[in-house]
Each structure stands twice: as C-alpha cells, then as structure tokens.
Length: 275
Image 1: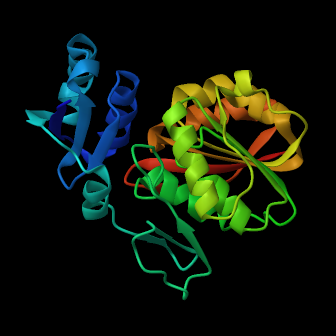
Image 2: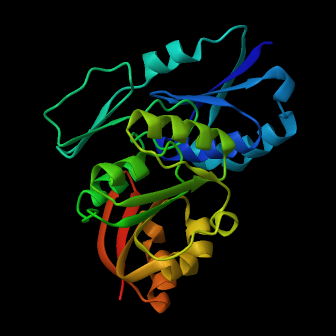
C-alpha cells in the first residue's frame, strides 16, 4: 500500500500544532524538517476534506506552502535515524535515540525512539518542561504526567528520583510508543489511554506535569489543583507567552501561585505552587 507524502513548509511555532491536528485526521507518521514537517498517511486512510480543513485553518498564520507526493515504500526507522538529532538541556539531561552514542558527562540521559509521538525534546515546550523539572525536587515524590506523548517528562521524573510516576495520553499510538520508551529507560509503570477525566487518577500528587495546549489547560486547571497536595507544584507549557496572563488568572482562584516562568521561541512554561 502506498503512502501519501505531504511536505509542509510553515513557521516553526506551528510545527507541533500541525502535527497534532493532522494526527487527529489519520496521519500516522511525521518528520520535522528545517522548513517545517513532512506528514505521511496510507492512501486508504487519507481524508481529503479533513486535511484541507486543517491546512485552510492555519494557511495564513503559519504561512503554509504545500507539496504533495507518493512514497511507495517507507523504511520509517531509516527515516527517523536520518532526521532525529540528539538534544542537550543545559548540563541536566541528554536526550538521544537508541542509535546515538551515550554521553556520560551529562547528569542524566533519556533514550527516546519517537516514532510519530509528540515530545521528543526538540520543541521549545518540551525543552522548557525538562529544564523546569531540573529545578524541582522529585526525590520520593508522586508525579502525574498529563498528555504524556513520548513519555519523556515521566522518564525525567523517574530519573530525578520520583517514587511513583503515573502517565497517560489520549492517543493510542502515543501510549504504545510511550511504553516502549519507558522500557528503554527502566520504568516499570505503564502509560494509560484517555483524558484526565477518563483515566481519573486517584489520591494526591506532589507534582503535576501538563504540556498540552492553552484550551485544554484552562479546561482542566481545576482538576490539576484538586489532585495536588498542599505546597505541590504544577508545571505547565504548550502555550504562547501572550497566553500567560489567561493561565495565571485561571489558576489564582484555585490556590495556584506563579513562582517561575520562562519562554523560548515565544512558547512559555510556568511553575505554579498550591498554597
């Protein structure tokens, strides 16, 4: 069965948004490029109307240029190996694929074979979440990773000494990939499938990690606050710097106080504490 290939040139800040949107229409593999993204789907799974709707939605804002083609056979492992580069978050953690050599000079190392899942560390939101995790004491703590993608943040929590890590995602492909990455990094926990309301995590958590998008974060903020212990911390990302005020205004009545913020490429990340 042939794959359809769509080479999408777009502004950098729209790459992850387009990947998420296209994944919902049936695309099953993506490669990030210097110009934007390459997206792939089986001919039999392609929904032209849904695809056109996504492209039209972001055409102007993302400055999309589209090139379509057909790829008869795809060796995805070879494609990922050619296009996936390791990253370093300060001297805190080195994130690499299994085919890259180790670098023991870093405090921590995460092995991620990303496939089509989101959260490889390359995007500014994931990078900042990892950096913020390095500023928080995880030792002996109970951690919840909301919308886990590849599971990279859950792995980081484990490496930082968390006693217990729970993780879930709404995408079954992400769950499968996340569990593979858990195995690569020595986690025995399994990623669950569903939204936070469907998974319904129980008890209180010392740390909640949520790298999703603004609308989901606003909708679920009260749940995060309810799940946090007193003095527990909430790490948020997945939104632009201009959205910070909306997030903090939503969090404040729930007893969540902003204690740290950072930005990279106009993407923001926050640490809030339950007071």
